[in-house]
Amino acid sequence: MLQITEDTAHAVEGIPDGATVMIGGFGTAGQPVELIDALIAQGATDLTVINNNAGNGDVGLAELIRLGRVRKIVCSFPRQKDSWHFDKRYLAGEIELEVVPQGNLAERIRAAGAGIGAFFTPTGYGTLLAEGKETRRIDGRDYVLEHPIRADFALIKALRADRAGNLVYRKTARNFGPIMAAAATTTIAQVSEVVETGALDPEVVVTPGIYVNRVVQVLPAPAHEEAGQ
Amino acid sequence: MSEPLTRDQIAERVARDIPQGAYVNLGIGMPTKVSDYLEAERRVTLHTENGMLGMGPEARGADVDLDLINAGKIPVTELPGAAYFHHADSFAMMRGGHLDLCVLGAFQVSATGDLANWHTGKPGAIPAVGGAMDLAIGAKQTYVMMELLTKKGESKLVEACTYPLTGVGCVSRVYTDVAVFDITADGVAVLEIYGEDTIDTLRETTGLALIDATVPVGSGGSA
Image (tube, rainbow over all chains, first blue to last red):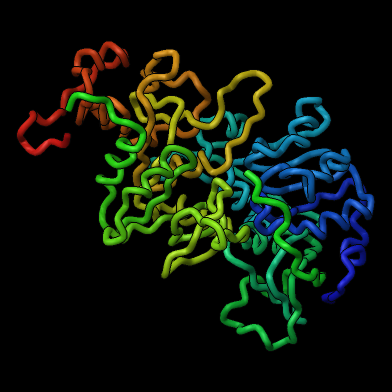
């Protein structure tokens, strides 16, 4: 049953220590900063986090890492100009890192939501990131076997939800939202606006409400900090 | 025909080979410059792997929108006809061979088209791959643009890469400041030379048995 709330603390209730949590966003675009702030306040620790990056600046995921609440991060691009909190923890051996090519990361998340057992992809074949993985030659091309990535919770950001949990996004902030929504047991979406059921054109719904468990309305804040790298 | 190309001239040279109406991904860094030389009437559509086709130039001033960024996380603009999609669709588009061309930078390219551009392999370096491996193998053609030599004067076009690979046998053409190279089944061919180099000095620099495929001056070759 979909829960709709205006309280981010309520929205992140029940995330336990040791949970695997997907966090949407590419850099800061689409990063659900208010939900991450609520998770920071909620206290869950020993988390495995799946995100494209490993935090930008001093807010959101970067702050969660600074506080030592993330045991492992699965991402494609941890090292950025402003990923100093991750860099420090990683170089001190205090956080585990699994680097996944960005398209494989996306497809592994998609596969989890789509009930795919594993898939062969050409990306990464013959590289360090495919070492130890099963490979197969299909029609003259070499592929690597990759497995789905699923999560207990997904924290994502969308532009607008209706009261059935249908979501629409905004520009490139869409990024991982739709696939993470499908790949987690419990999906929590922060949105700028909740509209009445029927007010979203069914033709433009991007994430159908079947994938969404909790919606929290977060009033649009001024753009959060500057763009990260 | 006497000076090596500047970075902008390499970008201009790459742009000249991009077909009318092509769907193209330009990698972060030097390849981004190629967009400066793609006139609107060529109707080239730019893809950015974080989920957009129809990307316009970098956004300035009031046009900056932090929900509209490119793969380098730089605010950009959208052109008429733009489309947004999620990450799995964006990489499916690439991996599925729907993009005509991808232009990437490189640490090294091997004589058989192996690409190394994601990791120095140095101890203590934090590995970060992003979309590099997907881009390398996804498009119908992968072009590299780079300076031929490292700061230490070593050729980046090599018999076999010593840096960790990004993709195997994926590069088809290499644009540099001193020459354009084609990676062919028969070996590496030199298409054009700029500056003081000759096919022989290039053979010496790269250590490769380069095939001379340059077009004689005056027969329509480029400057």
